[in-house]
Image 1 (spheres, rainbow, N blue to C red):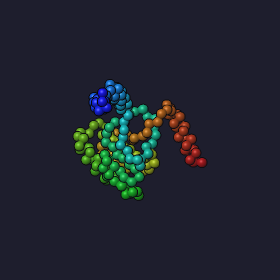
Image 2: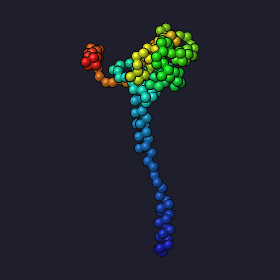
Image 3: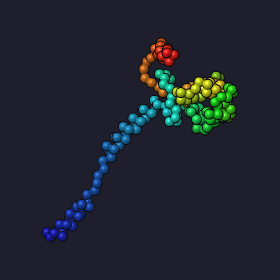
Image 4: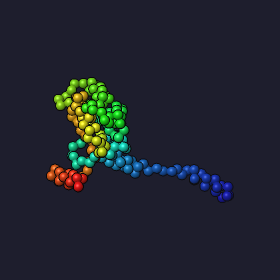
Amino acid sequence: MSGHTQRRRARQNRKAKTAGLNLVSLMDIFTILVFFLMVNSSEVEVLQTSSKIKLPDSSSEKQPKNQLMISVDEEDLVVQGRSVAKVADLFGTEELMIAGLQSELEYQATRRGEIPEGGFEITVIGDKELPYWLLKKILMTCQTADFARVSLAVNKVGGEASIEELSAAAADNSQGAAS
């Protein structure tokens, strides 16, 4: 056989070989991945929070419900992603209600229809350093706008601490702060 014929056969052999793709392994991996994501996604509730907000810790076992949310950081008071008041404007005011928040909550209440017994549900997402006077104004405004069932968003921490242990820890912290 001549060299030319050998080269032609070698080219034909190279062209005849096709790359094979084994899809069975790939399908197995994706099946396991889908199963893993389905199992783990049902246990976790992700709340949309700002990176500015550091939630307080809690050992509560109760899962939050998906409902109307108020988010508070050091700058803004936000309802469902819409800014309704600036925190700086609320300093030093004697008013118990926050006007922008109240009008937004009244609007949200009209969209929800009939008021259930005990009022509508709402979740407050606030920084753990949120001043009590501001939280009090938010809660009063929610109460007057028929959003009386208020939940506070927290980070869940592990542990089976009893109420006695938690109150003892709180008492130790308050004594340390007083010293």
